[in-house]
Image (cartoon, rainbow, N blue to C red; front, side, top):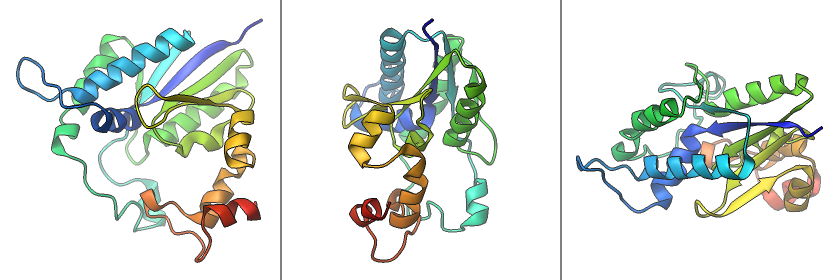
Length: 207
């Protein structure tokens, strides 16, 4: 019996990817809506290709997270996004609600955290296969026999679906070891320091 598909969408990751990948587009009011357009296109693409029975979207909320309490400099070097991007987030919320898709968000947590929680909870449902639609690779550590990551490459049309085999081919180790990889090599985008002198290649060799 084929498993039912549950798609979890990383809302903020897709909004950021859409904003930077799609040229400026405006509505009849003159408001910039390229991120909204990109999000809608992604949503329809996922819906058509995966034909899921269930869907949900997670979003970040403004403010610091529990990670900032553990490491004060978390994301400290990341530049603030354009206001034109932030202005489109409420519009994307409206779009998701128009499709009657549930939204999950929680103060102190990122969209990734909620995705991980929901995905792991769904593992008790043996007939459900989870697909995480995202624009970054932070959720790759969740991949197992019931969780796949549907991620965008350089453009919105460049799609890679990572399962255990695809991940192993790309990184050379098991998905669950991505945590160790990040601990060794760090993560420059989040300002997370690794071990001095160890880059991604050495981290892979050590693992």
